[in-house]
Image (cartoon, rainbow, N blue to C red):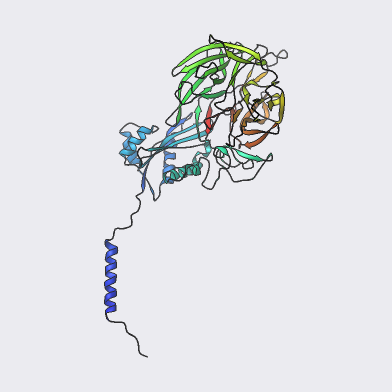
Length: 542
């Protein structure tokens, strides 16, 4: 058989081609790869009622190890320490300082913030500064829960930080969630829904509210901060007219005012209770028509209630009036008209008698007006008023007899009363007439307020009601509440129907507020006291 042969020049040409291609590959610029992003993790500030300095290095080290990867380079701790030591800085909490030091370290991103540990819980409040854009972009990343869950949850926090750096949506990595978790309820999973009055199955959810049968999700507010007292209650209002709300938190011994600065709430003023008086409740509203809200501060003085009315400018409380008895600003949705309600107080009965409307006289003093009809057994501090039926006439809603959610018409007649107990509180004083020699005075409870808001933005108002959950036994003849849920009700067919619910919250809730689309709660850990002492927290959900 004759074999076919290739031309002699084939081998020469092939060798030449290989050499040319090799040279081109050798001298051609390599495909560009994005340089790793430089991230500086600054030492965190530790705020705690016990020594926890070990967390400063431990948490920083764990976050760094979980964030480090092919696309993120963590700046060496020694290099960071040298930069901070030169300025005598132990921890970074200020955005301007973080930006300055990050630029000196040639960082693309800076992570800084605080860890707050109190009452068996923690709050991790981090800030991420993106210096790759001008001006630098500022993001907040927060997580909170039981103290023993801080370390296990750092991986999720790191995932959220990495997602932010890589430009993935913040909603996907919200506190308390993993990338596979979904958010079916309003407020980032704060609420879960009832269908036909019963819970339905669904994926685990992030945030406070969840599908009712899902009990394993973490309790993760958008943000929180501790207060160095047990809060009796709180309210929010733009007190000084600067366009930003102040947050007023009241405890037995003082009223604290907080304002938001650079993404954090900080105390800016306080009012100590006078000698012989204990503060009990606070509410706000522009009832006198001055254009700025007044502060209505209720206290126990001389075995009866006394309400003092203040106006506030930064650094100054101006007393307007004072009156024996209880005053509470009652309203419905934000930016709707509010009403000032009075109820008497006697030595024999701390909260006594019918409710009255209150107005201001031309001389700027309070005037107790006519009695509000009906509202039998209504508990003043729980009351709200709103047009729930949509007929243009507002109804009253509140806690009534036997701690049942109760609906009253505009004429005060009872329209509906629920069968499930709501409210409950550790905020109790003993006051009033005893039934016999050696008996204790009756207990007087200060309920969390009910709140009216359109939480799922469907055009229909819901009523948010707290249900604090007690331990099974009685402690010194008083129920002790250790955890809570919040239920959202809507009006259907002349009655209130539960439409959304929360997971169990590991605190006793003392008050509730919806402001500018966010839900705020005040909370404290249950204690075996006749009235709460110790420390509490303010938490919120966007």
